[in-house]
Image 1: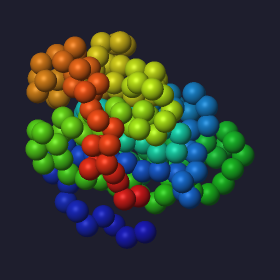
Image 2: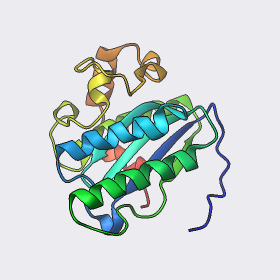
Image 3: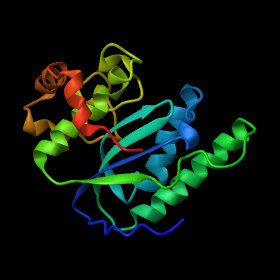
Length: 187
């Protein structure tokens, strides 16, 4: 697969996402979600990025990151290879798990950053898995609204824009799900 042409700039925000090959499942049970986060922390978040927000869905993921180091592509490659090998061993499968390389969008404004976190946190609601974001375990929404202590997501990048956890909860609850279509991804 050809190398990514886009130059990634430390000190900027990026929305990373990918889905299962042929739109297939990438998380088969609860432990897979937890393992994904553990491996992401080890290979990528430990040195390369700060995780601003995330949501893991059965067949895709969203990661909103603040880039600290230039080596994101190499770190993501090591991460996805490690996760894929583990899933293939566990479920006696072979071949690609993900649909090619991860995709990314540069987040170029504070307004976009704030609205993107809401989109990410409402993804399981929009897709009909739950009725409200606090019902979905595999999202950083819980850390944003103080439902769970966490060390991976960094809500402090976003919360000052709305005030605090209570204001963020209201901001998310006030969203019309049809307005999320402006964030729909072509993947």
